Image (cartoon, rainbow, N blue to C red; front, side, top):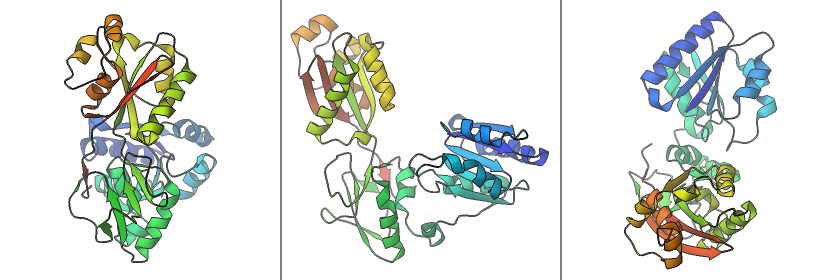
Length: 337
């Protein structure tokens, strides 16, 4: 987690340094958090915010709410991409989540900050103050992506009105179901699935659990990779948000278009030796020609399965010098965040 903080006084800087130490030693852990603290130079707040906004999971303003609001206004876009914004007064009395309370994790971080430095978290979102289930907050805690965030308000307002909503999940969810929900296979209001098909009126929560396996000719074009990717998604019915990484043979680790393709989609790109792929157990669409060239009879299927640690859900799709396959490792979900 990348946290960037700014303070406006010596006292604020002292508080920020204390907070950094306590978060790393406590709820977040040294290995899980990067905390950067700066003191604001005169007239430098706008420049700091512009620089800190992209790539940050949370921005902390150690000062007044008014200062923070004026600083962030030019950069606010939408709840699915905006970082968590938190304000702490320089005495450390209050910890106030201003933006991205649920999906961005501002509410949760404000509570952790409060515990770390003895501040009172000032949480104002309706579901939280009423002690009710917040679908977007639960999704964030489980690593689920919201495919249609415009449905969050619709779901939350019905829960606040006392309605019981129906949820369908393709995966087992451990723990006790919240009182405002009930499981259903049809007529559901919330869908937890890696697939693109389903009730379009439901709030769709997508687990990023699918690995794309890729094989391709040398000097393949980027547009060809994009077309093949869209085609395999359409045929398999897998939601694009469900794909979180790509894998291939190590001979392809520097293939320009493939590297750029992964960069464009934000996919970590994992590669394996022919020996590692050959050792993957299972029944795959083998090719003696591919084996002669690469040393392994199938690249895309074996790479997808090995990288995912799961099972194949879409076998090799081939065309225009490209092969693609999809594998999944189902998520471990719980109602207890």
